Amino acid sequence: MARTKLDRAAIEALVGILDEKGLTEVEYEADGVRVRVARTGQPLAAAPPPQATAAAAPKAESEARAAASAGGQLIESPMVGTFYAASSPEAAPFVEVGDRVKKGQVVCIIEAMKLMNEIECEYEGVVAERLVENAQGVEFGQPLFRITAD
Picture 1 (cartoon, helix red, strand yellow):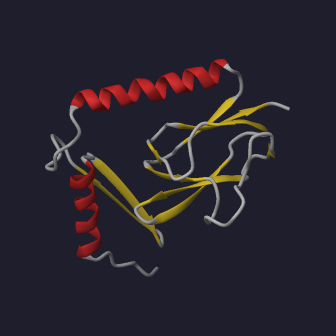
Picture 2 (tube, helix red, strand yellow):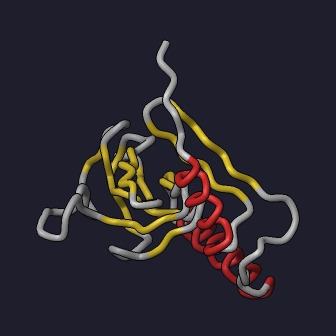
Picture 3 (cartoon, rainbow, N blue to C red):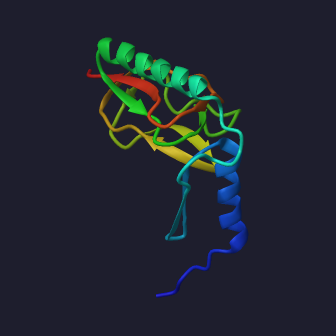
C-alpha cells in the first residue's frame, strides 16, 4: 500500500489556522491521510474574549430550541466554516423552503480551509426553514435547516 507523504508546510498551515482563529483543534483529511492538530491550554493568538464566546453559544442554543419547538428535525453544521446555499453565485440553491428532500440529498456547502464540503440531509421531509444566510459564517453544531415530516 502506498503511503501519502504530508509535507511540513501543510502541517504548519494547520498550526497557523489554530493560532489565527483561536482554536484548540483542527482536523484535515485528503487522499486517505487524516491529520489532527490539537493544542492544550490557551491558543497563542489573541482569541476572542470569553464573554464573546459565551454569548455566541446561548444564541445558537436558543436558535436550536426555537427551531425544535417549531417541530421537525434540524440539520446542523458538522464544522466551522462559511455556508453556501448553492454551488456557485450563479447557480440555483440546492434546496429552498418548501422543497421536498430525501436522506442523502445535498442541501448546502460549507467551505472550510478552502475546501468545499457538501452537506447532506439526514432526514426525509420538507424544508420548513433555512436558519442561516448565504455566505454567513457558521459554527460547529449550528442549526442550518429545519426539516419537517410530510
